Image (cartoon, rainbow, N blue to C red):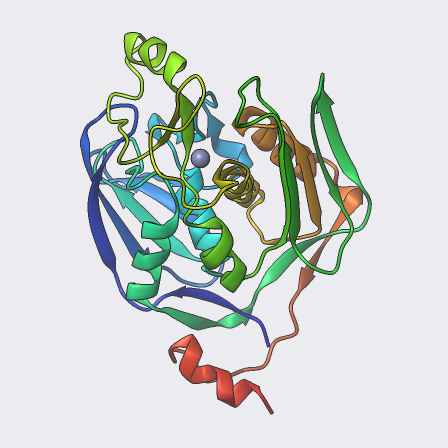
Length: 301
Ligand SMILES: [Zn+2]
C-alpha cells in the first residue's frame, strides 16, 4: 500500500546561502516514478546531480554534491525534509550553488512541501532494510546502523562548552515526529569560530536569524527546545543518510559524528550490500494523482 510519492505542484522560495551570503531561488518540481531526488542549477543548463553518495563532493561544514562541473552545496536540511515527508521523486532547482539556509532548520522546507502537497505515483516504494549491523568509528566519533522494524535515530553529542557537555535523544522518525520534534531545530555554531569562518570567506550569510550562536557561557538567541542542538544533529544525519537513495529501515546510532562521518557512512552502507536488502513495500493500485490525505480512507479497507 506504500506507493512512491512526488509533489502535486511546483513551488518556489527565495533565501540566501549560508556561506556565500548570495540570494538564491529554490524551486521544487514534481517528478516521475524512480526519478529520485535530483538537483539542477538553472544558471548552468540542464545537467542534473542526483542526491546519492556517488556524487558526494566538498564535505566540510555542510554536505555538497557535484557532477559534470555542476555543484550544489548545503543540501542536508532540504533532503531531511523531503525524505521525512515521504517525497521520493522531485527535481530541485537552484539559481546558484547553495540551498538557501532559511532559518537554519528544516521547518521552512516542510512548509513548502506541505503547501505544494504530496501525491502518490503508480509504483511501490523501495526501502533499504538493514539486516546486519554496519558501523564506523573514528577516534571517539562513532556511527552505526542496526536492524529494526522502524527508522529510529539515537544521537549523542558532547562539546567542551558548559551548555553542551552531553545531550542525547532517541526518536522514531515518522512524518509526524519529524515535523514536531526535529524539523524546527536550527543549526548551531560557536561565537569563537564565527570570525575564523568569515576570514575564510564562509558563513557570510550567517546571522542570529539562521543559526544558534553559543557564546562562552550561554546562547545568544532563544532556544526552541532545551536540547535543540542534538535534535539538529538528528536532522543532519537524516539528510545525509538520504544519499543512500532509498528510505532506510534500521536504527541509526551516532555519537559526536558530523557531515564527514555521516556521508562516509552513507557510502559504506552502499558498499556493504550483504548487510541490507532492497525491499519493495506492499502496494495496492490506488487511483493516482489523488492527494495523499484524500486517498487515505480508500486505503483503510
Ligand atoms: Zn545542519
